[in-house]
Length: 381
Image 1 (cartoon, one colour):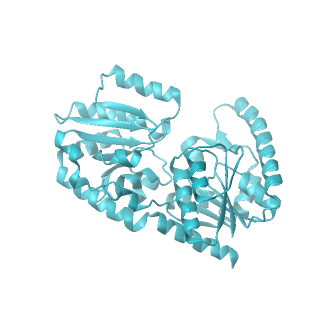
Image 2 (tube, one colour):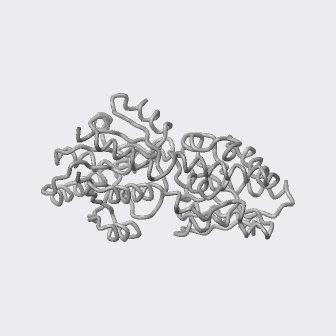
Image 3 (cartoon, helix red, strand yellow):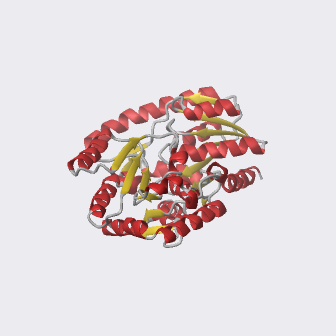
């Protein structure tokens, strides 16, 4: 089976990590010929070269965007629809003789796969990973009927959590939607026993929040919670905020840190050694209200870290409150959760152990790949 994957960015954030795990699983399984469309070269294309997976460099313009101003959105709509047509026409010319069996889009924010599948006469599978309207305030550039028809005509929409599935089922009741959790290879976290962390000898507790720097990811709220925590404890702690993103938002975070003299808080920027870094941490934070799934949450768990998570959407499905972490509902709850971690080392160590077991049972790349392969086989039958 020849499968064309389409992704809209070239960095190794959550969606591409999940896609890479899937492609690696398909290559290992055999019987599949994956190809990839990606907008630029980077770590992802380097890995494709190692796997012998062909790829096409092509722009993949999003078919929706945040709606802030009617005039600006209208201008953006004209420009982007033109780009999308040019990109899909280019890909059609490149792929029309490739005999593609199925196109697998890696995100709901791109429509190229649906448009190409119609032109090429093949099936389309659509991974839905985000609450694009709720989380990012996005609107489509295309009429609602066109969007609905594309979703309804897909062989499957794959929601990465029940929260995503229910959200899209309410919007597109005629679409065929299944839930398949993303997964990670636990072998990458084999040396992550939270009970044997040498760094704990310095008696500094280290919190970490990994994610794209964006207002709706609520890094600023985490900084405020850390500041409030300083007045509630004598315990020494540090907070590491990992990721790049909007320059304006990063500046706001830096201003808050510097303005409050928070020498225990570090903005590290993007790190390509996250898994090694997590071994030096004590608790992971995920503060986004609309987290579709949260691969980083699973990475925390596989690193034996208790997870402090906002009690909503995908996070509340992954994290079991007081078993594998602490779910909170507001900023005061976040402060309390962080304080609990500082004061209850035995309990959070148990949460870390429980979380690692839960992640290995439910959220592995092997399980994810097996479920998707089953779906591919259904397509052929």
